[in-house]
Image (cartoon, rainbow, N blue to C red):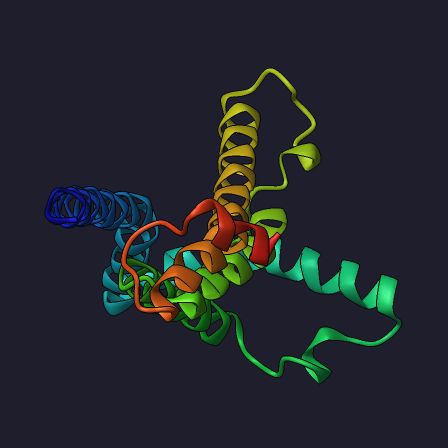
Length: 190
């Protein structure tokens, strides 16, 4: 029995090392993923703090927001401002805060952060990267917007995947073990 208990102890030590490595790797991955959102939010906040650059940014997004409002009104039957009574500047600030706070919370391994980033991506992507509205399919603008659109779709998919696999990891923490859940624990969540 001494040999068995020492073998169990060695396994536990190895398992905790693997779990620590996986936890550190997940943290670095979340940091790298969230960096795109966080850098974008910080850049927008810096731009909005400068009156001239902020006005130019608002002027550049105003047509896209107006088109989105018109489309919403034509499909739903009432104007968007009845649901979201915000100016363009307020919408930009709200979106920027959602993006930035969501990124910080996601780095902290928060499900709320992932949901905020998913909401941000879901709302912003078709409005700001509507490449299909650009008539010249060979222009640089069309190509850039198409790439940005599909990049955001991929990031939304990654967030969706992270969120869908989260219960496996959380379930293993809930029962007092650390790291990735065992095969038996995974069956509980599937």
